[in-house]
Image (tube, rainbow, N blue to C red; front, side, top):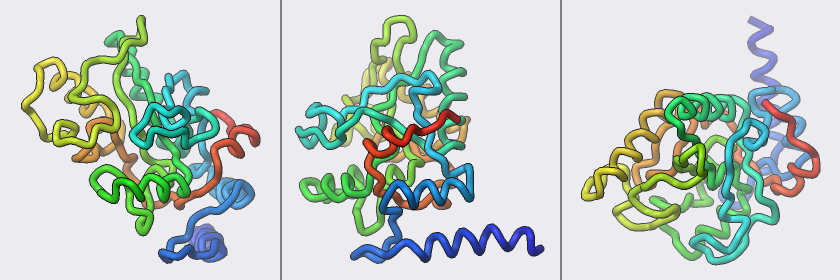
Amino acid sequence: MRARVLPLLLLVACVTAIPANRYGLHVVPDLATYQHVAQHDSSKRLVDLESLGIAIDVRYATPNNFMKQTLYPVAKAYLRAPAARALADVNRELAARGLAMKVFDAYRPYRITEKMWEPIKNPDFVADPAKGSRHNRGAAVDLTLIDRATGNELAMPTPYDDFTPRARNDFNDLPAEALANRALLRDVMTKHGFEPLPSEWWHYDFKGWERFELMDVPLEELRRAGVPPA
């Protein structure tokens, strides 16, 4: 019994040591705190998705996004270790069909969620900073399907970050090809432990996201520190 209680006490102590922000949320504020958390629980390590052979197209590292400005200083995509391994399993399954995935976004620092919220303030498309985002926990991913040989994106209902009803997973007045590709993405992702967001065909949350802390560690600090592979 004591062996099971001790890790829980360590986790509680670690979380309570993180000061609450203006919304009362405990957000990991820096690289050192994240490294301390990950040292005590290896499942909370962030993994560089490119190290797993996953293609990335990080739109927020360019002005090609709904904010029309560069939000990330580096183009990196990280997920917590269990989510990253599950995503690699998805990519391997897609390979049998001659397909692959391309990731638009994964871990997102909390400060970026605050910045995104201001012009939109619609929780269907942008997380309310009063609650935090599953992206802030390193447990959500935005992605699409691509042809493995050419790298070309498959037809989907809308472009990425389209804030219209057509982006919803239950919107069906669409070309048959887009419907089939959306269904394939949903089927393979849910098979490997991800759950779709109703309002965005590209967004998936990893089951159990609640156990990962919100974080505001800058992407450039993670890159400099060198995030190890899964």
